[in-house]
Picture 1 (spheres, rainbow, N blue to C red):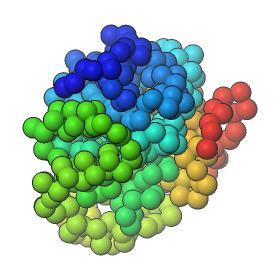
Picture 2: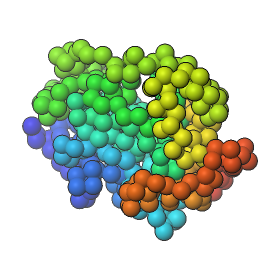
Picture 3: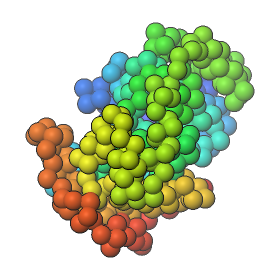
Picture 4: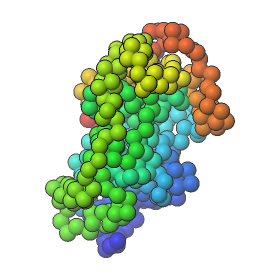
Length: 359
């Protein structure tokens, strides 16, 4: 890789930001922790990306993760346990960064080679170009953690084909490799063996423009075209069953379908946090109508802050990430107990915490 014009823009052990030729390169650098995103990383990435956006000499921004396992496996949510001030600060700043990736005028390429979940999705899903490989593993698993598919999930998920977004949001279903492309999460697909070559090609262009970036990505993608979406055979069922306006309607449609796929899906969904499931449906319904990503993220911040005041998030993190018994005790424990009043509480304005996001 050429290092002509190389200079460090900002750096710490967890995020490396540098300029190579006319390219701003961001490397998430916590490989042992699957590059999960923390406040320290956000605080260095956001102002540097803003700087690059204003700098006429920066013609392209690339984001990638260190190691072969993960691009970014999510936000470092375990840090929130016993630290409410941190979560109050983290979510608005994370969403501000997510929003920036969606409104950049500078071409932005995310190399989502490996696990890309939760907060890692937020860093990439709104960006102009997202390159998946056979190692890509996409998921929004938040309903099983007592959270909701945030980081702009309420905005981009309803804009996927049919009811795929609602299905992914409620089930946490994982899309692997090419499926990330077929599902609309990635804009391009290449094999991981050429990802470094592709990065080098992008960086070493003589005159970088959006057209030249797209042309290079298309050329590499064309070498690996083929295959079929693994969910293609289920899309009719997904569109039919996940068109319900409430979780009760969705469950009834799955029960009515009665196929092995539908019953398995139903049983899986019934294990999720009842509060998270009901709030998620409402969030995606609101997000589908949102005029901009920024508008959706403001609502998501309200939801996240309210969830930090309730029990399910802490119980989900305990059961899935700490004790790993995968036996969370949700509160409320049943879908019937999650009232409209509980759901509505997640959407109330928080005047001192709504992030100011440019559109």
